[in-house]
Image (spheres, one colour):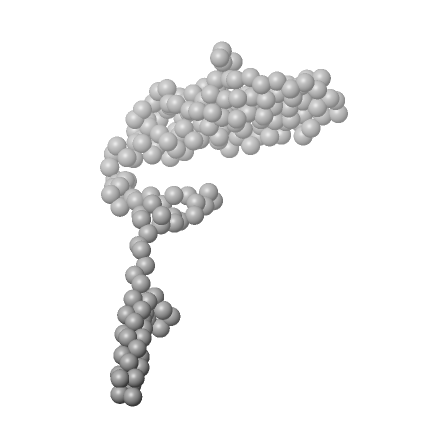
Length: 209
């Protein structure tokens, strides 16, 4: 009887030992045990910020020096850029008009012109009205300024006169219904009145591409 009890105890002990060994190896992966360490993603696997084309890229300007407006070179640069922008605007306006409103758009540049140039431009407008009356077939031009450069008058800060050359693209809608594209060179002579640059002469010539 005792041998039988010993045998049963031996079997039960062996079963418990086997169960403990199995539990030891499987326990870390159970729901109640510690979590196995998760592998870290490689740098190439980390998702980047989605690209948004509507937002410009952020540029680091911390090392870019702020222009000193008291620096003579910076003042001259700004003065030249301002005069070139004025020339670009003037060239586009003086060459954009339509017979539908009796070429009234030409008058937009009168405030930027001397009295002599205003008289010249008004004569030009009247000539266009005679050639293309508003009750006739529609005629018009649209001029787009492409680039500008200063031919003379530098340094602009100290000068009283300057010449700016502007290259333009012209789309002409003729009275016969046709449309054509051409390129022109607009040369503007400026004179300074106080601190304001006024156009005193404008000359337009075709460009050979």
